[in-house]
Structure formats: structure tokens, C-alpha cells
Length: 181
Image (cartoon, rainbow, N blue to C red; front, side, top):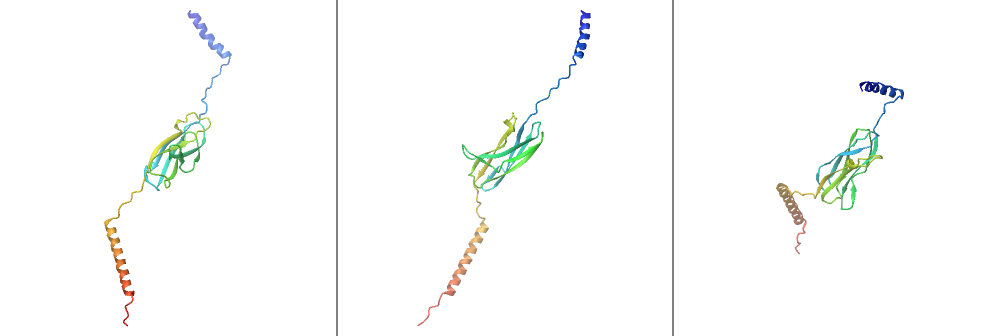
């Protein structure tokens, strides 16, 4: 039995060397994967007509250089979305990330809480698209007008009173004196 094992252990390497068995090279397919890492509004709560800067960080998590668009939008009604700024097209090397800023002018938006979404449009061959969108919230509120300070209110009354007295004095001075006949 030992002789048979010894013979087999010597013959098998010899047989493999005769067939020139090479090393099998296994490589992973080139992957395409982009992602939105963060969406940060600044500020998160504003009065209407103010500007909100939305910073989006995107990353190329794949193995190849990628060119893709990044869009930011908010949900203004139940079935409609509104884009914030224009989509930005970027090119990222594998493993690189980039920060983008979108300016949201809130002039024509109603008060309320809005879901703001950043989306990196999927690239051809991308399988993992769940990380291509990310959401945050921004609150828009009506402008709150502060009452006038008491000192300013009193100064305003004094100015109006001075103008009234001066106007009356000018009126009296210019009034024709009755002539005696």
C-alpha cells in the first residue's frame, strides 16, 4: 500500500508537467458604481426669499473612470418635482470623490418642509443604484417682522410732529391777511 501511494505521488506531478498546465488567472469584471455620499443644506431652515446652498458629495466607487450627471430637486407637490439649479456633469477617476454646490433660490416657493434629493444618474453597467440618491429636509418659513424699537418709534413721532408744526407755520404765514375796506 505504501509503495502504491509513493508511486502515485511521483507519477501525478510528472503527468501534470507533461500537459503543461498553466496558472488560471481569474480577474473581476470591471465594475461601474457611483454614489451620493452626503447632501447638506446650509442653512436647514430659512425665511422665504433667502438662498439655500445644497452641498452634494459624490464618489466613484467603481473600477473605471466615469462621467455622469448630478441633479438636485425638491418635492413641491404630491406628484411634481422641481429641479434646484441645473444638472452638473462631472468626470471622476475610480475611487475619487467631489463636492458640488447647488444654489436654491426660495423666492417662488411656499412655506413648509421640503424633501431635497440629490441624485447621481446611473452609469452604463452599474448594478448598485441604491446609493445613487440621498435625501435631506429644508424648512421654509414666512419672514418674521420684528416690531420697531421704542426709541425709533418715538423718533418717528417727533419727526412727524416737527413736519406738522412747520407745515402749519408756513400755512399761517402765507395766508392772506384780510384787507380792510
